[in-house]
Image (cartoon, rainbow, N blue to C red; front, side, top):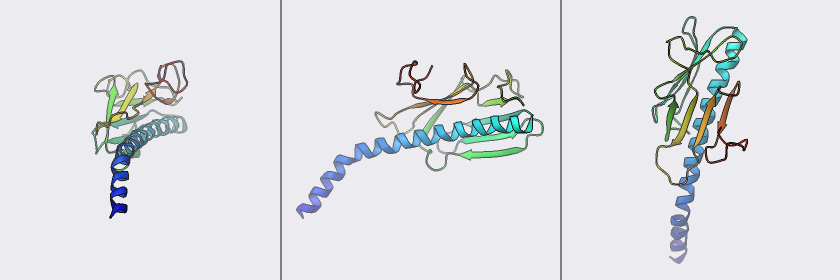
Length: 163
């Protein structure tokens, strides 16, 4: 009986740390999935020497991303956050922008096919509100040619930090 009491006490003490670990992994999975989709779109644009767009769906639990050719709209690859990143909140910046278009040279087009401006950043946070969870940002373009995952808690001068 005392063994069960000790086991229950240890379980209660470990729960906050486990919840934080799960939230951090969910955030990391979502950020890596988005970055992977963006990198794939950029690579396909170069490979096919045509415009390729990546559209991010920020819905919590059911969102994901789609990479497709701008010329005919055919889907090249998709990613969903159904498992491993379903408890995250995605905030695209600029607000309400969800698309980035890569040119045949791999650069970011100034204007997407739908005449909107390009997506420059996606903030990934915990939807479950776990205190202390490590938020991440996925940066597109800006002062760099590619995609970067960064931690806003680090200073901008640190390679892990966000500019």
